[in-house]
Amino acid sequence: MSRPVLAVLAFALLLTGCTGRDFTRVPLGSLAPGTVTEAEIRQKLGQPFRDGLLIKNNETMKALNYAYQRTAWSAPGGVAPARAQEFFFWRDQLIGHHFTSSFPDDKTDFDAAKARQIKIGETTEAAVTALLGPPQGIHRYPLIADRDTRALVYLYEQVKGATSAPQFYRQVLVIQLDGGGVVRNVESSVTGER
Image (cartoon, rainbow, N blue to C red; front, side):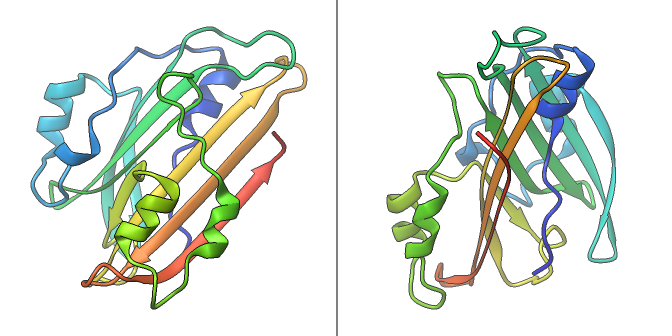
């Protein structure tokens, strides 16, 4: 599976000093891929911070990005509170989404070291969520290459420090599941320092 394209809008907001428009995260359970349209997301959340096109696995998708930051920057050394949710549409149907937040009330930070406990071909979706909690997103084809699988997405991004020397941190865990809900592949990455 190729590395999925993930949102970095929280970082973009922090760098530009923009604050976006506050939004409430659309609950994971109400976002079944293949049953939600772009118009429904726009009706629920309004105009996105950004929208655009994404090409992945030779398919063109529409992406809607919603992002918000409470203040331009945090206190020196502190984490800037920000959140972002991104939605992907293919043939006008939702095929993936993910969410990240550094706000204390909906923070998406997770223990990436626990991913080592996940065994390909053995660990089930229920065991993954017991280990890591509910995912922050779901990806399906063409966000992932295999049409017969889906992926759970865990994502956390933060920026701290001053505008002159920001410190970026991002951790991503994408767990691909087969049709029976058993782990087929695990991809993880950590960028930057906390």
